[in-house]
Length: 163
Ligand code: FAD
Image 1: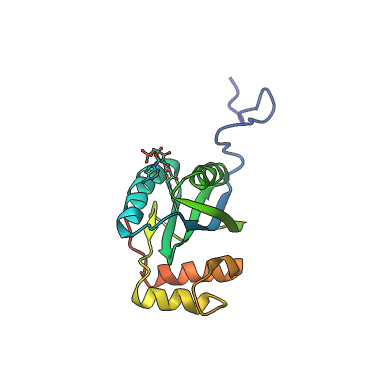
Image 2: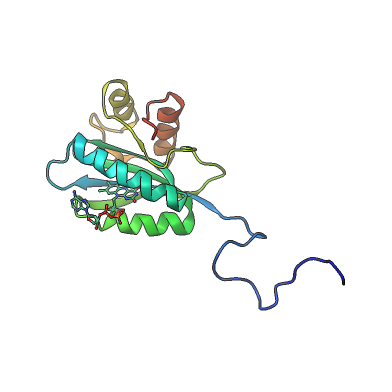
């Protein structure tokens, strides 16, 4: 019996992992506006559910809420990130969701964090404002490259609370 390379009998697989074509990693960053007055407890609730769900999906990322504006970064397979983003966009706790950046990445920025919380306080707040084009934190006006650098800086200085 010959032991050679396994052949694909019926053409390429259209679903499921393909060992010959490793999964493409994607980073999606979006901003939205909270509906009503959401506070720290509401954000912690979102983080708790996110950590549970994202771990199962292989998605990592970080979330912050500043003056009624959410900014979230999601990393993972293209399929997982897309599906999750569309579910999140339907959530009645926020609206005006806008994708600010969507790109292929070589490696994750948030490593083992299924969803990190960025507390919008003190030094973090100063950093967020410093990266914003205007006097207030306004991620909607930020360039994709600035968003990437901002998140890397938050992570490198351990300003994200891990799960
Ligand atoms: P459950 O958490 O059990 O919720 C069931 C349903 O109730 C859902 O339709 C949910 O939208 C709704 N719901 C729950 N709590 C409230 C509430 N307080 N007010 C109104 N409706 C509510 N989910 C993730 O899995 N990963 C993420 O990274 C993530 N990020 C989020 C970021 C933001 C800014 C927001 C607003 C939500 C985010 N969510 C995230 C939550 C997401 O929108 C869904 O609510 C969640 O994924 C549903 O999880 P579940 O199926 O386990 O249902």
